[in-house]
Length: 145
Image 1 (tube, rainbow, N blue to C red):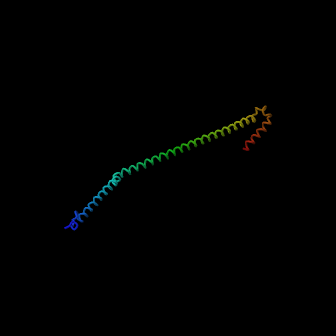
Image 2 (tube, rainbow, N blue to C red):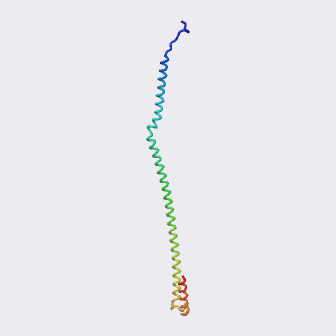
Image 3 (cartoon, helix red, strand yellow):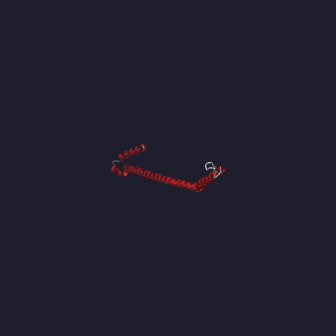
């Protein structure tokens, strides 16, 4: 037999090759699973921590927003209160001014009436008949008001 005509028996049979391929595919599948478990495991293991951190962060942001809104509201309230007090003081001052002017005018009229209607001051206002005439005139002015 010549070497070219001799049949060489394969080292592995077809069935053994199939078994080896199947075993390699199983090992590859296990490697892929373990890699997926590692990446997936991080999220699974830390999901509670991540959710707690997110909720805490959101709570801090909401608290800061509330403090900011409260500060703005308080500033507006103080400003409004200050403006109201200022307006009230100005109103009281104007009322006092009007009262002083009215009291002054009433006091002047009272003094004039005293001078005009007093019988003792005939030397200032003239004769007694002149005084009577002035009294009637003043009474007429008073009744018209």
